[in-house]
Image (spheres, helix red, strand yellow):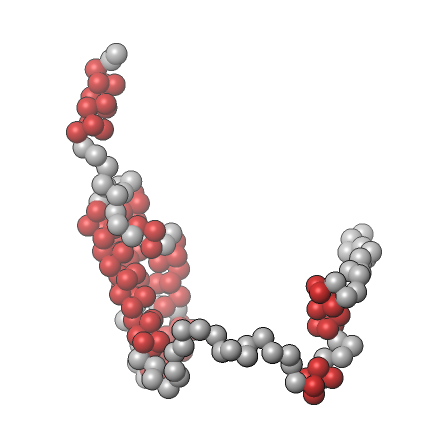
Amino acid sequence: MSKGADDLSQNTSENPVTILKDSWSIRPCSVYKDEYDDCTSIKARFHQYFIYGESVDCSQWKKDYDNCERYVNSNGNDLSSGEAVVRSEAERRQKRMDAYYGNNTWKKRDNPPEDWSKPLPEWLTKKNENTFLELKQMELDGRKPVEEINKSYCAIM
């Protein structure tokens, strides 16, 4: 065996590869760049001003992009950059879920209502008569054979 092969086998046995926890939450780096570009575009700035009365801080998308690039280019060895992106994704997810957790208007339920599968009211059944929706439902239920459409969508110009 050559000396290079010995060094490689020693390195892999001595230095186990550390896998970043929740690395699945890191998006492709191009997504962070696209989000940053979209956030800083004139259209987005106009929308932000209309909705919030001021521009939104887009710097976190840029930081995430830079950290993602560092993490990916290091083949997962730059754990601090990877952890920063994972932490940012967790904060973003938590911020998005705050409205859900803070909602006290609707009662959250554990099970569907008991009568969730009851038949539709008569007026709605009558309204759906002879519609495409009813036709497809009848085909799914087996009450009507499936129509095979023999159309050609090829156009030669």
